[in-house]
Image 1 (tube, rainbow, N blue to C red):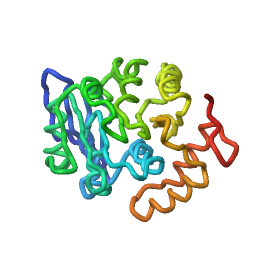
Image 2: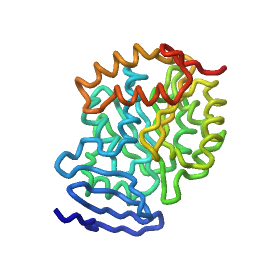
Image 3: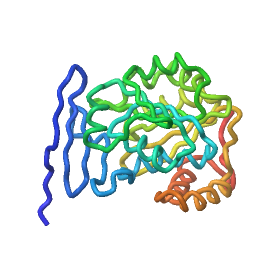
Length: 263
């Protein structure tokens, strides 16, 4: 069958241009470049299409009792929609700088209206973090632009702000490009912020790497616990969590039972 990439929408504003394309029943958002920011199956709008989003949602294995999520960066809303539909116990706030992204996420990607469990705020994610210390037990950063990760979202001060926004048993999750030349620098900064309590999960080659930072009062589960939780979670979620745990184990120092982190 002939495959084609059909342009569905284009919006230009004072921010990055937002484009929507569609191919073989998969709709994608682009921000000023051909790079895909978010994708959605038109026939199954709440399913997670991109591998990085599976890794990001594996945060649920580390923080199964999460109740308040702050998500910085909406994109096409894949993660926000998924949490809204499949994690009814979680109340989430999403902060997105570009108003066109919010508009297109709702008009073309089935992102629901605000309600008691979802609030989307147009604004500066860093400012919001600084204004709400200790306010959430799960913080996820997914704020890519046309040129990759914004410079202000990878400084030592920024990672410190992220930690300060979390409760003492909070979890930090960030989506990074594995090919970023400064990836090791970002890791060192996060290790400093979280006192070496950091794990990384590659989601593909080449591709995104999800990094997790654990506040002091959040235990890092051993591998047996993670595998048990992954099996349990697959009763609710259509995500191959066991494969993700394999990737996590392969990317971080461990003795086959526990992770062996510095500090």
